[in-house]
Image (cartoon, rainbow, N blue to C red):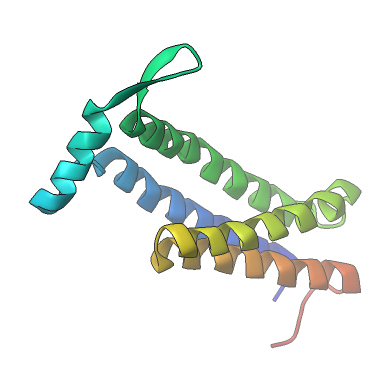
Length: 144
């Protein structure tokens, strides 16, 4: 497989992750059962002061979700661009950082969220690591 193909696969995985995350971020208040509904209600109704502002845990949760709707496609764009520029010194400098970021993010998602989301990110990280090996070897492809 070529580094370009591996990074394009990683980019598509992150776009799929973005799609799933966006659906989840938009619908998180739709409680699947009364117990979860109580938790959501508590997150929305209990205000506390934070840095001079009255906030809720629901606001933080929702805000972080919306931030990730921006971050995930940004990662996908970087992966796509790196696939087109694998010989570029900047790609060779930044791709290892992004690959480690994706692997760590996948582990964190597995621990704190759920395996399905983690799988997309972790696989994108693995594709990035394999692409790095291909790039460092100076070959255009890696044999399966």
